[in-house]
Amino acid sequence: MASSAGVIVSVRGEERFLPALIVHSVHSQPRLSPVPGSPLGLAWVAGKVVPVARLSDDGPHLVVCLSRGEVVGLSGVEVLDTGFFAPSDRGVERQGRQVEPLDVSAEIEAALEAVA
Image 1 (tube, one colour):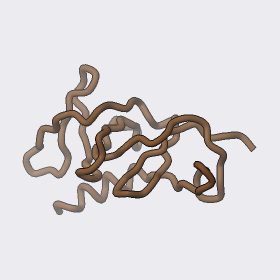
Image 2 (cartoon, rainbow, N blue to C red; image 1 turned 90 degrees about the vertical axis):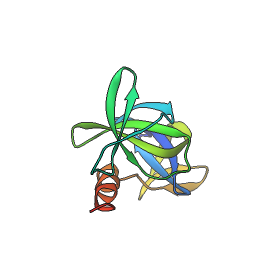
Image 3 (cartoon, helix red, strand yellow; image 1 turned 90 degrees about the horizontal axis):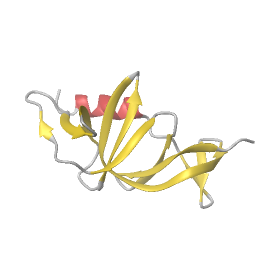
């Protein structure tokens, strides 16, 4: 069985997997600028303004990835590991444990609904 390349992140204390195909880059947590009337923020990342969904207040990293064809930042995450991981029934395996994928679209929708 082929391995899956990607990033393991901690979000709200839970490990989640992001496939390498959707991860653009990883950065230290930048300063976020609020957007009036929106739960999303904006960050200056590698010379571009990126919309950012804050997943938690705990993590030190920002992961820039693709969601539905759009570039978006996920803040408040901690990158735990990168590399190739054995696939499992519900994601991948890391250190003998199953790690489920992070549903980026669902996280963004939840952030948008939190204010609605």
